Image (cartoon, rainbow, N blue to C red; front, side, top):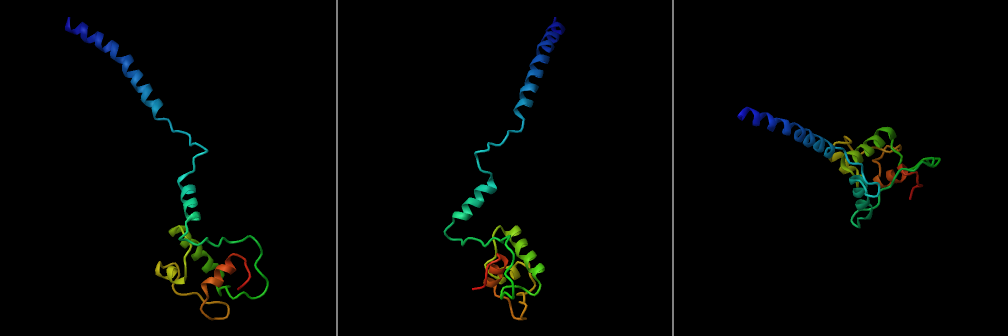
Length: 134
């Protein structure tokens, strides 16, 4: 008699286990993101953009560089631009001066301008953005 009860119990348990498995698998589906809810990156960007403590970054322009010598043009533009953008990628914000980049080992030293003098950071950011010197 105990064997018969055990067989009946197993007969009822199989469908219940199968149902439990199906319900758990349905609950594990990846949810589609809500298009109206901003992602974490978008929310962080919005918070940085509206922060009163932070100046707005100078975003490089697609406009051609001004003709002639610009006091912000480095002697080695490719290396300096690469380090400048790598700093942004790593830190999430643009540097406030060459010292930030040297301290974080993005650059070995303050870069030189085309005239051989140490490059002014503000003039470099203007050159990077495609704006005329000030």
